[in-house]
Image (cartoon, chains in turn green, brown):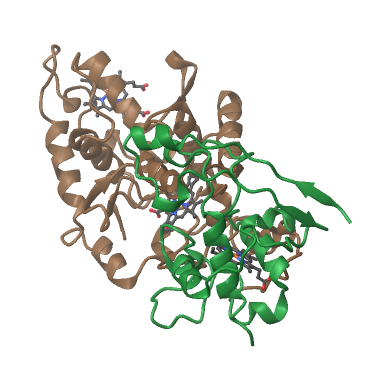
Amino acid sequence: MKIERYVLPLLGAVVLAAAGMSVPANAAAEELVKFSVVDGQSIPASLTGKPGDPVKGREVAIHRKKGNCLACHTLPAPDQPYHGEVGPGLNGVASRLSEGEIRLRIVNPKYANPATIMPAFYRTEGLHRVAKKFQGKPMLTAEEVEDVVAYLMTLKE
Amino acid sequence: MRIIRLTSVMAGAAVAAVFSVATVATGEPKSGYDFAEPETREMQDDDFSNPGMLIADYGGELWSTADGEANKSCADCHGDAAESMKGVKTRYPAYYQPWSKMINLELRINECRVNNQKAKAWKYESKEMIGLASYIGYQSRGMPMNVDIGGKATPFFQKGKEFFYERRGQMDLACSNCHEDNAGNMIRANLLSEGPSNGFPTYRLKWQGVGTLHRRFKGCNDNIRATPYERGSDEYVNLELYLAWRGRGLTVETPSVRN
């Protein structure tokens, strides 16, 4: 079993705020938490040590400036127009994948498939020419990742 | 997903291969026109309903207006654009000896502005520049894109190609991830095209105006949260060369209409 440790730097949230940049309220001052990847397929433990909130997770998944999962996936969200077809539909994903496998695909799907088009939502290192406003920041906070995991875990077939 | 369903471990290389068979590898690139809504195509089809024609007509006025210290118009030296500028857009970007690198149509226009009219260079995204680039592009309407990537152009072509396949931004995406691997797929409300250059400058409904190809590059960089390059930069001109080559054979649609 291969275990990788991922340690990431502390953010200059104060600097960003002082520069007047629009920082999503809860994505600002987050030091990325350490997590363990098992066999390149799973992150078994919650990033926050707590279960997420599936109702908030649905909002994050749909929100265009947060998860925007609908850009590439269909979700059982008929109230939302325009579902993408770049990735597989996510309805029933919890019947196919374990919680840890789902978490890994949100944190950084490149562990499972380095060639994937899907962005890593909890990663700040090893990226090229990130726009200033987003440098050193993950696309989602640890809480938001856990909320989305909790939401996807409700999508059983 | 429309074409194939992925298992989570399936190698991306295999995915790219499957999609490119359907698109670029056949040697038959598709225009953005082929991916546009019928109403958008109709706007482009009829010069009277094509809002891009207004700015192209403005370019036509500039063509014959004397300007600069030389007090010369483009027409004074180039005559009738319908003859002298016919086919020019299909050859650009081209290798430009005085710079020992590539030049695109917009930058070539500014060369004449500065060196021949002895006037101040136009801003890249100015109404004047877009007007003349549209007017000159229009003279090649219906002719196939046919850039030269041999000889001295080759290293610049290679750089443009690398750019196209290089991942960037917070979302870590390359142009190819969207415009090659997923051409023909919906990305939220948008149908992904192959990202060709044959229609530029383009009237975009979203812009409510006409914009250059480099403005589109900036938009596609911004969307994935990457730092864009300057319009007219070497990076974007080389990328433009690669795109023009990918779309070789596509006919010029300037000024095209897209959403």
